Image 1 (cartoon, rainbow, N blue to C red):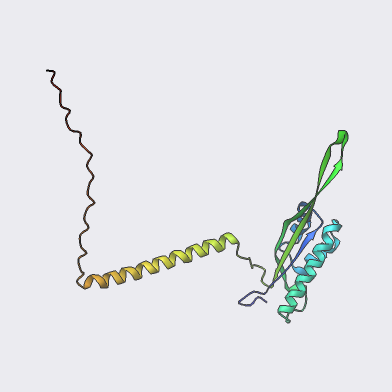
Image 2 (image 1 turned 90 degrees about the vertical axis):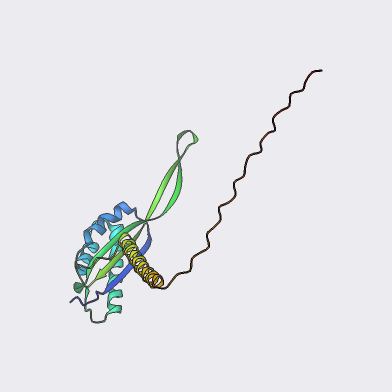
Length: 187
């Protein structure tokens, strides 16, 4: 039963020695499902290397949710609202090839994170949305401060204002004029 503020439990695992592309195949299956169904899918999916990590990750997230709210009895009350796979570190190895060349082998890893909630429709606020909201709040603050400045200016206008002394214009520099050259008379 969703309350006014949804319960959010997160769990993440780093350095899973599987490429992110392969990890996403399993994670895409569990996104948006009930937590107990997602655990079953992760346990029996054919991608063994990833499914073991995702299975233990989901169990950890359920345990985190139970720790936050002891009223939760089992995983059937929770939903997988967010499941992400990001790229981890990449180990670079070299394999000898013909004519003395070295062939680079990239051993990739993944970082998997899962968010569970008791509200099926809960969606975490994206960073782009957070930036939009912060920008809107800043604009509102600017408008409010502008109205305060206008109010203080209006009250200042009601009082006779002192005239500011006029500023003198800077003096212009004139260019030096050459004296007309005198003609020498030949005697």
